Length: 132
Image (cartoon, rainbow, N blue to C red; front, side, top):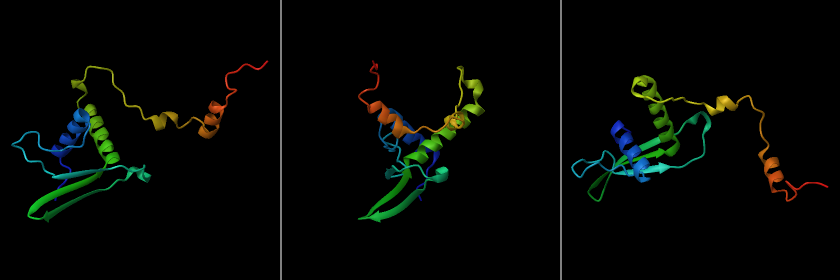
C-alpha cells in the first residue's frame, strides 16, 4: 500500500514550498515516485486534531495506480512537529534566537472577544467623529 514515507513528505514539502503545488513526482526522470495520485483534503478543524488518511492500489485498464489522500491540516501538523523536534534535537546547528510560542496558551487568560459587536462598531459611520 502507498504510505506517507519520509521521502514522500520531503517531496511534498519541497513542492509546496518551492512551487506552490502538491506535486510529489520523483525528483528526477530516473526516480519513480512512491505514489501516482495524491489528493489533498481541505476541511474544518476537528476535535482533538484527528485527521485521517487513506490509500489505495487499483489496476485500471492495465495501469497500476497507487493513490494517497490526506488532510492538509494533517500535513501541517506533521511538518510542524518534525521541525520542532529537529530543532530541539539539533540546537547546536542553529545560530539565531529561536522560540516556539503556543498562542493558545498565551491568550488563554484573556477575556473572550465579541467579534460581532466589534465589527458592528467598526461599521458604524459615526465612529471616529467628534461629538460636539
